[in-house]
Structure formats: C-alpha cells, structure tokens
Image (cartoon, rainbow over all chains, first blue to last red; front, side):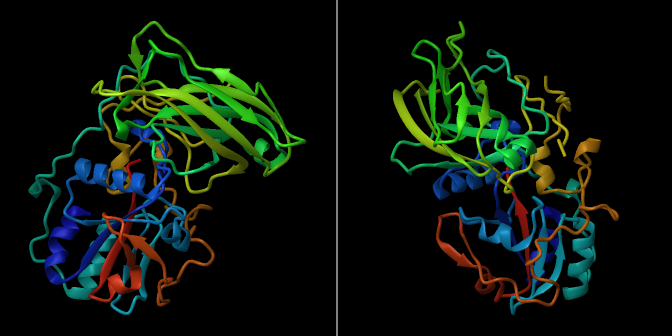
Length: 294
Length: 86
C-alpha cells in the first residue's frame, strides 16, 4: 500500500487508513479499546509501528464506517470526488488497486518497490514477563462476545475484560463462557503480585445462573507479570441475556510511578460481537497463532 | 478439553496483514475472499455497490475531530482502506 501511495499521491489521489475494531483481539497483546480516546491511542500506535505517510482516520465507536461496508478487516474502496464508489474490494489487493488507479490517473513510469522504501517496522510494545500464569483454553469454537463498559470513568480501563463463547452459548444461553482480564499494553501496566490479586463478581438477572459467580486471580511467586487472568464459567440462561461483571484490581505502571486500586464494571451480553473475528494469543516469546474456529 | 491448536509462526507480523495483503501467512490466514467460496463477496447487504454514493457517515481524524467521508472525498479520488493493529 505504501508503494502505491508513493506513486499515486503525487498524481492527486488521496489515501486514508480507517482504523476499525481489532480483527483478532489479543494478537501482539493488543486489546479492544473502550473509548474513542483509546481508539486514537491505537491509531498512534499503528503510526509508530507502520511508519506510513498515509493519513490515519478512525471509525466511530459505533463503527459506522465498518458497518457501512464489509465485515473484513482490510477492505478497500475508491471514491470519486462526488463520493461515489468507483471500486470496492472486501480484501485489499495492492496489485489490483495499482491497476485501478492507473486507469483513473494514468500509469506510473517507474513504480516504487518495497525495497525502495525505508519503512521502520517497529515491534509491538514490550510487556512485563509473560508465561508466568498458565493460559486457560477457550471453549471449543469460541468467539468474542459483546462486552461493554458500564460507564466511562476518569480512571482508564487498564485491564480489559474479554468474554468469549461458542455458538451454543449464543443460541441457547447455555454453555461455557470464557472471561479474560487482559492488561492493556498501551497503558504500560503489569500485574503486581505483591498486592491483592484481581477479583471479579458476576450479577445475573432472574433466570440466568452463572457458576461460579465470583473468582480470584492467580497469585504467582513472580513479583510481576503480564499474563491475562482467565476463567471459565458455566452459564445457564437465555440467549441475549445480560450479566454484570464487576472487577477490582491494582493497576501498577511499568515505570513504578503508581499502583492504585481500581474497581470497574462491565456488561456482557450473550451474543457474538461481530466486530471482531477470532482471538489470536501471543505467547511469552512473542509468537502467536490460532486457526479460525469457524 | 479444548482442541485449540496453536500455531507458532516466528518473525511474522500478522498485524500488518490487515494493511499489506501481499504478505502471505499460514493457511489459516489465507485471504477468505479468494475464489468462489462462501465468503468471497461478503459486503454487508446494504453496502454501496460500484456507482452508488458512499453512505453519509462520519469518522474522526487522529485528533478526534469528526470527518465526513463524502466531504473528505470531494477533493479528489480517494482510496480508503480499513486497518487495525491486529
């Protein structure tokens, strides 16, 4: 994309990246932003890592752009100056895009190659030690479910809840549900294991039973780590039911400037969150992978 | 017990697959829009076709200021690509 930008921007073509919901939450430890400010933090991080000259925009938190177009993570469109769609593609194809643009403004005599560019591909943000707390396997076929913060607070959501379930859970309201409390690497925080571990509690409406309904995170010997605190609960409820999750933990930054108690609340709805695809875990060595559960 | 298989693929950044579809990945990450498979053309049903006006939606710039897509495109031909960190 960058080579196309280099070749066609001088011909007047405008290029924009539109930041959207995470395709694969947890890849390289990135977790879902819960506010527009946090989404803009993701944009800043994307700029840092990619080093592109292309202008970044961000979709609204209602994902208006994404919902207007396609479910794929890297769709592309060309609009004419009247705002009409000249080309749309569900999956970006740079070679074809180059041909599309050449048809509009003429070919480029000496196309830029990737080797011509000196793009600083930066690594993901460092975290505290990982591999300290064993990971909890996801239920078979699990995908992210709808999780919303109850309120925007002045205290950031240093730890983000992700809930996942298999289609059985969305369809019947019954089955295993994964609850994972993940540090947000953009806040440069860690689990301080010398203070009380994370605690959570679920409140369910009448007709919905969650077992267990509360839990306490691991308390390993290592003084600090960045592993998620994960749990599997059994849900016996109804499709679309909403449960409240309250979590309390100590947010402690890597620079050791603060370590504060935080209590935050989420609502988990027993439906799939279609703005994300499957999660991809990143291990202690930065390796990642997980095939599609579909 | 989950049968999750974990693939370890050293040195590759899937993050940029969202922004650079030229980079091949493991089989599980092959472009699902290729060929005649069921996911080949999964635009949302209401998505604009070629020739249609793009929906009148707003996004924001990197400072959080609202930006209207049609107004943005009014300057010249515009390429818009969805992307994210993962």
